Every structure is written in structure tokens, then in C-alpha cells.
Length: 514
Image 1 (spheres, one colour):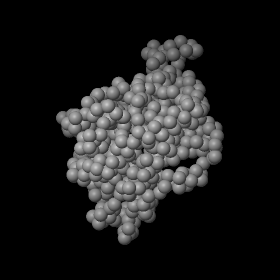
Image 2 (tube, one colour; image 1 turned 135 degrees about the horizontal axis):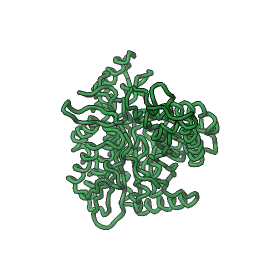
Image 3 (cartoon, rainbow, N blue to C red; image 1 turned 90 degrees about the vertical axis):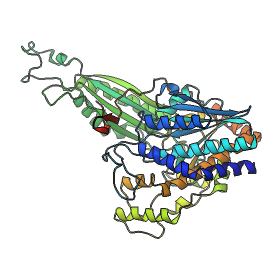
Image 4 (cartoon, one colour; image 1 turned 180 degrees about the vertical axis):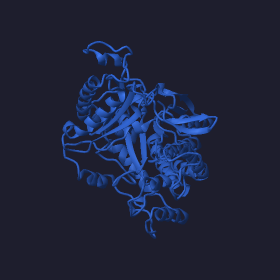
């Protein structure tokens, strides 16, 4: 085991420059949900070059993939890459506010950043593979490409299609995004359920709005006559009523949220004509499925009534149904042991100097130690769990949201958090966090640490049948106690008008389709 770990660490050290360059490339692509064409193609090409068999477009999703590598008979360990970015967060990897070259600030950019998340997983997979080859360890590795995480897009689809079935374990990691979950492993309180869907309002027969009058005018829908309110009015009414009724939709307990996004307006012109189509997306993040069903049913009723009020029809298009997470203490302990061996990320003097430049650019005082102390220290899973539970009702089993939870029902899963740079003081504008997620000196320590922790954990699983069996027995027991089958009974929502980049004679531009 020691020789295998040394081989994995040596691979990461030897390829640190490559990992940095690769991470910077995905950060620069910054493609949003379901439109990660360059990012997915990059991973597919890289993994094939590393000897993996790669299925492109897995689960019917054009920007997803599933890559596998096997050496003899043995267990298969899974990891995954995410690579979707967020609209209106375009930021260059510099210590001041500036969009990436050739783009405006409303283009997409990495926030979490998924560019580092995917690269940390790739580092873990490739380092594990190198160690397996060096030491003749039998078994296999799987890495899936998971697009559209911000809208919980791919993992429920992959889960329903069986891509996680049969794995000895799934190792999930994320750059730290909220305290106390920094340089630790989730214990009992895993992420909750999430539903996402789009209401598509269409004003297809505006002439029917005239029924009940004294006959149609010579020119139907003349400018001097009444007209159907149309799809824009439906969207606005739905948006406003949904927000005003929010406090009546769910009980005042636990952590939950409802977010809206307007995908398109469908307005033909500024003429005296009703808008023909408008799309309104909802993202519901709740602790459990009962709450998700409750609020979605109430929104359904509201949407049907709004459609009638505005002369429209309404169609509900599912984007995601994601289950709450399932703990696995045995696997969490393995990952925590690996994290203790590796330690927290370390930041050099140049990295700290760049962090101070970000502080100054935000109008804050430069501090000797610009990063919060949690970035460079570990916290035990049980201690983090105790802090997390302080604000939660005792009966609430899950909190916050991420769709790795769907993997938990198909294989033992560990959820690992590695620090990303976060500044002392503040408050800071969003660009400051986004910039630090792209500046190599600041984000590379996160990627390297994640790769080392993931490879250590994977190697332990591949070589220790007792550890695998213990995790498997716990997984079977927990899943049987309250089984939840896959929920994705809908096709991938890839054809909705999600924002994207387009290339024209004018160059590559950010585009919001209608």
C-alpha cells in the first residue's frame, strides 16, 4: 500500500504543471449547463489518450461521458468530473475585476469552481491508475462526465440508466463552499432533494380570447380591440404569485429554497401583439422528497390557473428529480484517514500575495494572512456534523443541495470537501471568489490536494477487501431501511433554450437563445 501511495503521489507531483494548465483551460472554456461542448470533448480526448474506453453522450446527454479502465479482475471505483459554468459570472483569472478576453461580464464563468472539481477528480483517477500499473493492483476505474450540475441535470439520468450500479464505491469531492464543510468529509447530514422544471407558457390561439363578444372585428385582433394577455403576462404573473405565496407553500422548518430563472420571453416585436412563448424555470432545494412533491404540486396548480387567466396553455418540462443523500460512515472514515495523511492545501507566498491584491481591489485592507484559517486546517467529520446540526431541527435528515446524492443509492459514497481559497474580511463581490477559483497559484493547491486524497482512498478500497465489505454492508443496510428508486422518468432537458456561446462572422459571443 505504501508503494502504491508513493506512486500515486509521484504521478501528481510529476504532472502538477499539466494539471494546472488543464484546469486553466476548462476555466477559460466556462461553458454553461447542457452546452459544455468544448469541456466534454477535452475530457474525452484526454481520457482516451490515457487508455480509457470512453462512451460519449452517455445517458442520451450530448455533453456527458462515461470512461472506464480495467486491469484484471477486481473491484471498480468511481469518480466524476463536473465542468458547467454559471451565466453572468464571467471573470478572468486575475486579481481584479475583468471579464475573460473578448467577452462581457454577463457571459458564463466558473463559480464553485467546477473547473477545479473536474480536474481534481481527473488527478485522482489518473494517479490511481498509475499506482495500479506500477504495483500490479487488479481492478478498475470509472469516471463519468456530469454536465449541468447547476440544474441537477445529469446524475439522476445516469443513475436511472444504471451507470453507477456495481461500483465498489463512488468518491465525490467538492471545493469547500460553506463552513464548517472545509477540509472534511460529510458524516450524517448529506445534501437533500432537488426538483427542477420549466413551465412553458404558449399563447397559441389568441383569437379565442375574443369569444363571448359581439363578433370579431374586420381584422382579427386589431390594434384598437382587446387582445389576449399572452405568454409574457403569464410568466410575470406566475413569477410574482409564486413568490408571494412562497411562505404558504412549505412549513417554516429546516433549510429550503425556491429559485426562478427566465429562460426566454418569445416576444416577436414591440407591436400590439401577445407574446407567443415564455419559459420559467424553478429549482426547488428541500430536505426530503415529500416537501419537493408538496411545493411542486402547488406550483402546478398555480401555473394552470395563470395559463387560463392569460389566454395560454402551459407545459411542464422536467429538468431534474434528485434524491436526498445516504451516509456511509465506513467509507467516510477511509476518506478522512486519507485527508489526514495528505493534510490541508498549502499556499505559497506568491499565492498569498495575489490574495492580498484581490483584497485591495475590493477596497479591503490587505492582511498578513489573507485567507480564512479554515483553508489551511482540518476539521473532523463528527465535529463538522455537530456544527452543521446546530441550526437544523432534530427530525431533518438532510440539508443543502447537490446531486451527488443520486449516486448514494447505487454505491457506497463518500462526500469529501477540500478548501478553496476564501478571503478574510469582506463582504466581497462575486468576482473576487470567481477570480481566485481560476488563478493557478491559488486554485492549484486545491486540485493537487483533492487528487492525492481521492487516489489514496481509491487505492485503499482496491487493495482492502475488508474495507470494501464493511462499506458495502452499511450501504445495503441503509438503502434497505428506506429505499428510494431512481426518479428520472423524463428525457434529458437538453433542448430547452439554455444560454450558450455562438460563433459567427463577428467571432465567439455569449448568446441567450429565444
